[in-house]
Length: 514
Ligand SMILES: *Cc1c(COP(=O)(O)O)cnc(C)c1O
Image (tube, rainbow, N blue to C red; front, side, top):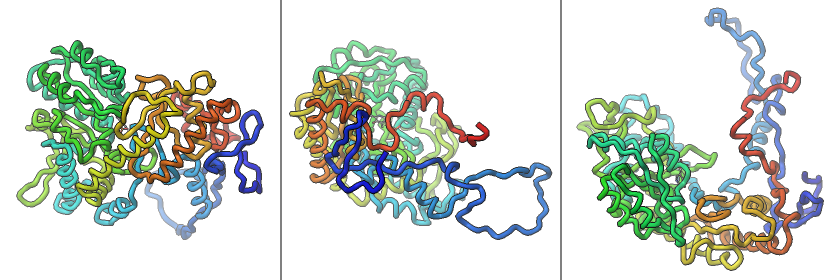
């Protein structure tokens, strides 16, 4: 805990009682905050409602008898409660957020402004079609540009996350196979694949065959050739892959899978590295999800819902889910029912994440075609700058340049007693969200760093300086003082995340009752 009236000279105290100075001058996220039920009071309120006059209840005997027991706070207390809670998190608005594979880029406020225009926000999906033509235009225009940047003929807009998009793609693939009268049971996925790929395949009832990576971090072509047979429904391939490398053989892979009668699902989570540069349609892709919340800057990671539209090739287009927008006689129309079509059906109640569509379209239109190409150039440049500036002190997993993220492993921590987890936790004391840890699985103790194009050279230099400082501490005996049990300055330290996930406590119980 922090002492009161502490001078500006910023220091922390490690578990062995020694004080230390942070490199960035970060003093941690310093206010703890109790639950709203613990600080609130049922007799208190931020608004004064007029007294209710005499009335006759029409609830017929099911009226509430006791106090509702909701915690009340004054308006400033409410603001402070949520502001303090927000300060217990690392956030993109607080600092560089190098979480690899997640593309934590700046969320431009222009997008927020557009999404909050009343014509955008005050509509309901059950309104008559003639009254929501503008919203359907947003969906249709975004769909057009997403097809254009990928060189693909069709798109399903409704999936609500990357993983949901994967499910959409595999369901379209299964429908296409059904239409051919074929039953195939295997999905191929490289070892470096994101966990959602095999999970989606298994959820769809497929068996997953894992394809090893070469020492260069790319798909082992000999192993792939050996794995392809007439039972393979599809390959799920991330490109650039999760080692931050472009799969040079991607075209050959597409040809091989097609020759065997299978389909090519591309995980497009890393599209930020190639947007405006490479069109997946030219590489033989049959289906690819976007993460609008990654590539197209819509907030995620607690800041907003995802959106995972899926582009489809001609072979898969007929099986796309409903609803979808078409250009009708009198403006835009919605195809709502799958009956009488080859569509595999419906995945979501309505059209998808409308607010995120608006933000993503605002982002695309404010950047233009040249701006989008510049995004991937700058994202790749920043990642290579990080790689080049750190590879003398951290162990880069692969030779040569990377795409938009730089992969390191834990060899540089050998004999220090410090693990990837300890190193990542120490970054929190410096005010940074850790990089992605222990993923991909193909290298030991992985640390995957994605700076994104959002960051200026000064910001990236500060980040690099911080990591160089930490590597120096790590390799000069700073174990106990800086790493074991880090973070020392965060309001919550090392939580039992497994227990929290397996046995979440979702209900607050008043102490005297519990
Ligand atoms: C983020 C990510 C996903 C999953 O996307 P969600 O939107 O989180 O469901 C899948 N694959 C890769 C490579 C990713 O980085």
